[in-house]
Amino acid sequence: MKGSFFEGIGSMGLAVLVALSIRWLLIEAYVIPSGSMLPSLLIHDHIFVNKIVYGVRIPFGKTWILNFTEPERNDVIVFRFPRDESTYFIKRVIGIPGDKVFYENGQLYINDQLAAHSDATRPEDFEWVRDFELPGGKSDYEFYDESIDGKSHSTLKRRGDSSRGSWGPEEIPEGFLFVMGDNRDNSNDSRGWGFVPKENVLGKAMFVWLSCDDVLPTLTFLCDPREIRWKRLFHWIE
Figure 1 (cartoon, rainbow, N blue to C red):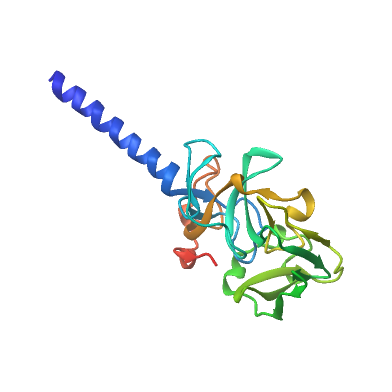
Figure 2: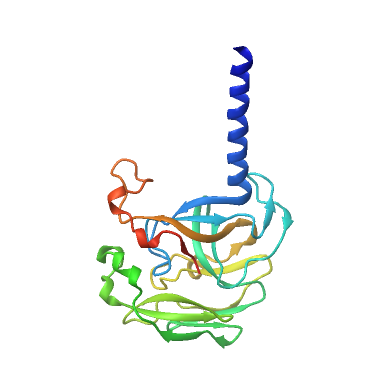
């Protein structure tokens, strides 16, 4: 009897250790809290973050033990907000060390080269976005396909005043990244508070594993099962 009890405790301890190791080393779940990454990511998208893609760090620390690769332009990353490291942000990497970045009138320049920018059709998933989630309502926005290093992603821009969010030109210092939200006129990003230290990067966004229009009234971290966006499940993040 005593042996069975201690065996059970040992099994539970091992299970907890494995779960913590996976969370620390491999993947972690994250919920999209705002519309700053529209149209790529919707509010209440639940995503998995690849924590080992860039390397291995000391548990619960910021020091890297091994470095596999560096964050690249276009990567969608989760990181500790430099002004409050208890808060996690998700944005797209626009500039890496040594890049000169300039953003004005909705146009993005990297190293004096204009990023390819073309009109885009309204994504089907945008139908799930509600008017109150965007200042001025959904009809006040236009869609563009932006291409950086040959990789394309959709961006959202508000009609009218094209001077919102202007920044630079400025060179990205060594050890830092310049990030922006795809919802260019409604994103709290590097244009407002500066660069992201590489040591603050937690991982690269992988895919949406769950998505919903609304959450449960009391358990706000859980999706309302009646409001699941089935077509968003296993949507790969680009």
